[in-house]
Image (cartoon, rainbow, N blue to C red):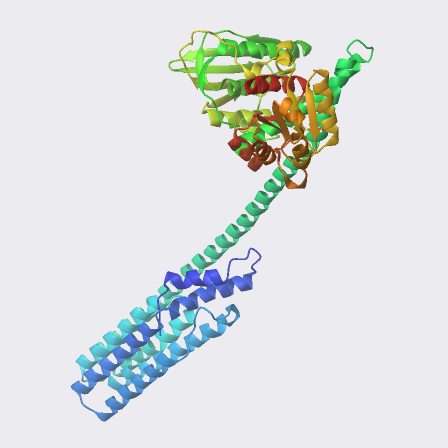
Length: 610
């Protein structure tokens, strides 16, 4: 009995017995043996038909050559044995793994019995005086063994059990005749038997080793898959934690920033004014750290869409110089920003964000010397380079510096060196804008970061980039534009409502602050709203009871036919929610919002609604 090893049987078995990284040696051996058993049983029916068909053909040939009744009896017994084997229970894919050894032994015993039954043919048919019969029997036995050799490689006991009885019977029958020709055939058959067994042993080892390697690879893949799943869960949990923590931190920080701005304004001429200024510097520093984390969330969420146009690098560089000159002077460093007259195609705000992160990073890691920013034309491209004389970066760290939270030579997490996110933001913006960034540095020898951008033709006027480079102080004109505005504020935090109300009142702005949609409905239903309508509806995004300011604001606009625009104020950092906000097209401010930024936003939105 013999069979081939088709792939479907192996795949089905693997699906029923998935790889376990903790599989022991004994279990691995059983799984390998199971594959071998599946292989030999896969062609069970064909093997029965072929083997006993050859036996029947041999018997018929012998009967035609020399009609004898015992030959017919041999043929009948042989075919009856084949029918019994055909209807016997056989292995199938549902057999438990623990029963594999029993089925392997059963198949080996079965093929041994088949071989012993067939082994009677040489003893019965070979004779010294009938060379044609000897030739036919020899060819049939050797051919049957040759066919079985390849099919029974997976089970070595079955290979031996099938091959040895028939071949030894043939060798004995040939040698028994005593003449030189039969003795030569006996020696030849013995050599063939030894070669067959040797090749069978080698092939069995190869098959077994390949299965062991397959299962070990599956175990490693399963273990790797589990580790990846654990890492992905940890990353998702980290993202959820950062989003929740960032939101919860932004809420009180937003109130602190507003109360601090009011306090700073009140104490401007008081001896405590310097302490108020220091307080606001600390609050702004914390706000900048949270804004940096928000930038990462917004970029990962895909809510940042570049507005590409022609950008004057001289205007951009002037803004950089204004922003970092004081910081460089405080650190006793030189900041050289060189005019070039070049223009590039990019988003001015996002490009400014890239360059400001690079300059900020260079200043933080430079103790002596300075930082230079320059631009050079290279054909239809422009190279912007930020160079420093800082500590430098070892070659093996050139790629790692773009990882989140990774910092060179800052094992103590010195807060003065930031969070380690700046270069990560640079890399994200580089991909978004398709501006490749290259770094060249050596330890102790400074660094050079190069951004490659497409060149652009100059515009008529060299205009300062707008929103990203505004002054941090609110201009009187901006406040005047919004002075007569009436604002409806919806925020479920009492401290924030109080702080916002104080700030608006300090600038002669009328505000009705409520905690929920229900209270807003009551306010909008008052008669005085018709006489003096609201010019702006300002909502916190995340409200109590699972509501969000976007849905609440849109419902109020539809219900009351409000012409007042909607503005969102949020500390949200969840990528999904940020995508939802961006898709709405509603302007949004991210907490903590300082007083100047809030007033600028009002100056932009309210006059447009008037």
